[in-house]
Image (cartoon, rainbow, N blue to C red; front, side, top):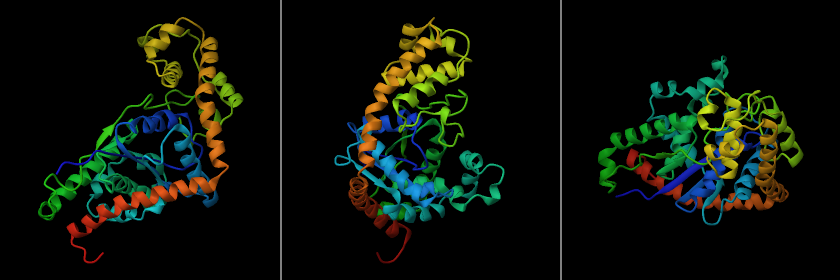
Length: 344
């Protein structure tokens, strides 16, 4: 039995959404709608692996949902929901906790990065969240996941868990008629206009919500004046822009700004450099400001409009959760039978 093509992806509601989230994920979410059946999730269970102010978390869940909708995700043609409303995510995660091996989890580099030096005080949830991520994907038996380069290791773990589950319970799975295994070997979709947007203050670091400097990122909630100010203050170097891509090597900040311009304009870096190469950054930044305001302004305005009506956002999430639960509950019905649980 071949697997039906299905896309799943999610965004954590942990603070201000920024340009990196938009170009690295949300733009791709919108584009994939024309090719796949898509399930897009606000992964609020992942958010609480570190402490969250409950009121802020509630607001952030709605903000991410508003960003999905404002950018063009269609919640009627596809599914938009928040993870905590579909209990099967946590249920399958526990099964996967019993399938995954400690050695696999110990190799996850993001835990080491997020836990820092004080690992003994990190939550068990932070350590185990790659297993929950695998459950997020596989509870919908998703065949494709749009991800950034930094998430490739987690998708490899998802594939390892799927393969071990399929092998451990092969007789039971085949008896149910799943000749190709129960869970698919999910494929990454690494693409979109910009898979890695870097900090405006340090081109060697990824743009992040956690950076203490607000000038390191362009938030989707920023108004036109704020966007202009941040781009003007973005770190550059004293040399003119090169005319060819090779000239960006070793110039992290220049490469980042050219990459942002290319992504927002739907062009290649080479095309951008053909237009601006040899010129000063002041001229290029002015053009980048105009482009960023033109592209992001309507999305910001629509996010504000949607956020002013939380009841509408909650209704979208409720509808999406109900539809997601239909898919997830069917997966869990099979999983329970496969592993030998009794009853519903």
